[in-house]
Image 1 (cartoon, rainbow, N blue to C red):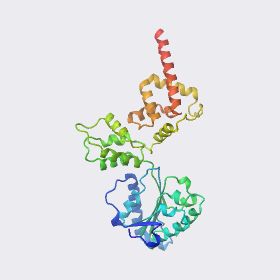
Image 2: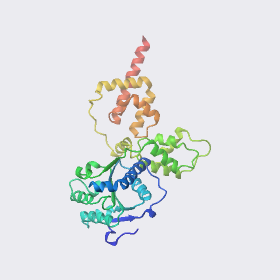
Image 3: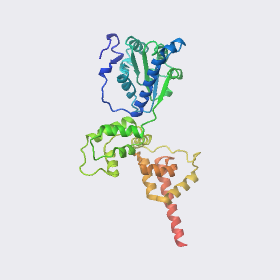
Image 4: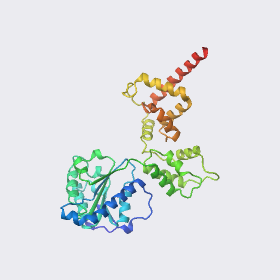
Length: 357
């Protein structure tokens, strides 16, 4: 990999030629990388004027997103397009109990400066430089002395937990890109790339049914479907696609409802009751809302509640129903079922009374 023996336990170096051409990437992250590439090109145009005015261009980028985000798409794109070398910290090396982690950080930055022009890619910033730690102080000092305009080093750091990083460190980055989960285009592009020869599948439908899934979840699902035998005949129906997703055994951990369902099922005990009174929906008012939903369509209300309680993916029909009855998101699974049954009894009693008149 072209690594210096003195730094082999701390970092890895990848040349542009070693970066794979083909890669399943999160398109929205690639778009951010394309935007930053234009910033680098603009700096090249303004370099002389900036030097005359004593201006520096740090070239420091912070990527923030939920677990499962494809942070790696950013350095991958730049490595091929600039082109530029990628230098990564080895987490197992920096965090090794037998190695002084702050010295390892210094060595990593020094290695990047020695191999300039280069791009230092820092994964899991919250682990390498946690808040209120010596590592955080060392990281701040090193990154301040590592710029594109002088040292020819771009620093890209990624984190899923910005609250676990010192604000002083966060403020040093010149640009921050927020990755807000996967977009519909992200998901469509993944399924198109992986399942491009599957005529039995509508990738737009799969993308719609995986709303709320993280990028890694979507990638795992695409691979799972790819490995399954293609169905013969016509294009699969929506119900068949939903069943295909369910049978894939892929965990949609990017969806908080899915994770909550897993926790509830594996805990083996009743979840603690949430306060019966909430600021948004008082108790009596909630019962009235449930009664209205049951009166409108009891079967659909029951089905949507079951989907929520099981942490299953929401279909477009489910989301449309919840847009009218968002109160169903309030409370625990037990709360929902209790109110549903209570509303059904009240509705049946009202129908009987009305029938006698």
